[in-house]
Image 1 (tube, rainbow, N blue to C red):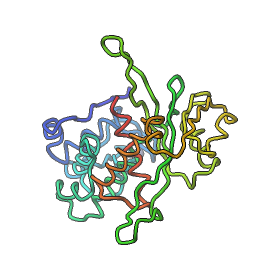
Image 2 (cartoon, rainbow, N blue to C red):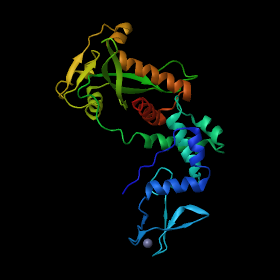
Image 3 (cartoon, rainbow, N blue to C red):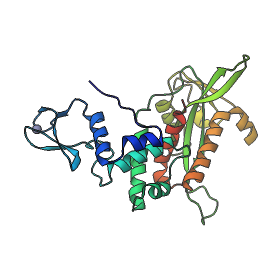
Image 4 (cartoon, rainbow, N blue to C red):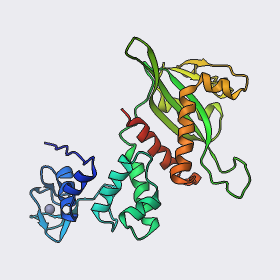
Length: 290
Ligand SMILES: [Zn+2]
């Protein structure tokens, strides 16, 4: 039997469910060991011994060896209390604009900035894992690339610290009251690509979009091979006019402008090294709207 315990969604629920470290540990035990311990050392199965002052440790009653309830999780081998991790998870998933490491450090009274940063970074990386299926299928997909991130302060206006991010977003339709059809953005995928070559862009498409999906792009040669790759490719030829591009690919342009605003507004720019984690968080939030 496996138990799926709900994680709190409001501040009051958080406070009620996790008043102290023991309550947080009890929750984690119930989620991860709903049927008691299966000892990894001797194979013994039953309710383990739990120490009152070490709630994250399960002791096998047969071989007397210990199993940590944080083993194989992002929380493992950190000295940060479980409560701080849980609050971090709560803040990362509920704050509409996302959580910066500095805000987080202040809110939870984490003494070192680096600790706060590492916690958020690990949570962001863990957040996207369940979400790796390909998009498209019955919905057409808009695709484009943009320069994102990079702190260029004091170094001129160059794009040398920015990464090229490829984006693919579903264009869905719904019928409103009165029979009018409205377009809205469906699921999103983003990934940093090495360059704008066909090789790099096609690798992203194959990983992110279901075969045979309709893909709308601008007229860039990097997309010329999508038909050969098995997609229903619909290039929109643009005369280099940014306004025309907005009209032809409205969803993906909206995504990129939101992404840039979010990175600047919440995180004040991010370095190339950490950009993948922020892209993951953005995609996670975007797709969670459903
Ligand atoms: Zn044992």
